[in-house]
Amino acid sequence: MTARRTSPAPEIDAAPRRQRGRPRRYDADAARRAIAAQFRSAGYEATSLDDISAVTGMRRPSLYLAFGDKQAMYLACLKDYNATVEIALAEELGRSAPLGEVLRSLFRRLLSIYRPSTGAKGCLALAAWFEASSAGMIIKDEILHARRRLEQALLHRIELACADSDLQAGVSPATALRLVIATLDMVAIQSRGDLRTESIASNADMLVALICAASPTA
Image (tube, rainbow, N blue to C red; front, side, top):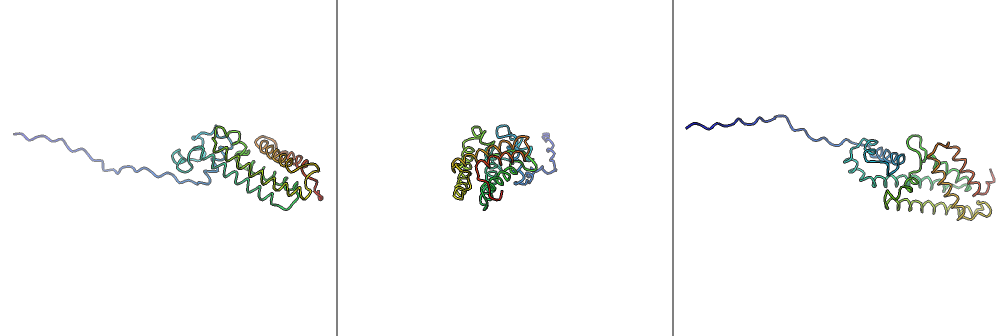
């Protein structure tokens, strides 16, 4: 009886299996700033996840784990932006100075936010308002709530100015508020264009003169 032939044992690769590498570490604050700049530059609808991946240097899975989906990223950027504006608003409106001086300083402070030394120009909140229908209801709610807080803070400061006879004769607090809001919107819109910052501030100053009584020291 002949012995059965046995096939040779398969060769075993002694090399260790390649381990899947850990995701690269990232700077969360720098990534958020890059995402916000991308949204400010291109808008919500025109910004793709590939765009966000490119500006942050992060892959899509890492982006999602860190910041959620595109809408969540946009909402977080918008909240951060609104918080920055509200800090500036509180500091400027809290100054003990005539309303005209306060408003002129406020508009210049906002211009420095709308036009940073580097990066995209413009008001992210205003851009978000125009894209609220595509960005979703949660974005629209954030915009509306921030707008109400802005109007309430301005109205309170204007009413104090009215009590101090700081408004032009015949200008009511309600009228002054509408003019200030219109000026804020004008500054935000013009900040995206090529008009010089000094020219935008000068335009705002002319509207302030329609609202506020001349300062005794002017």
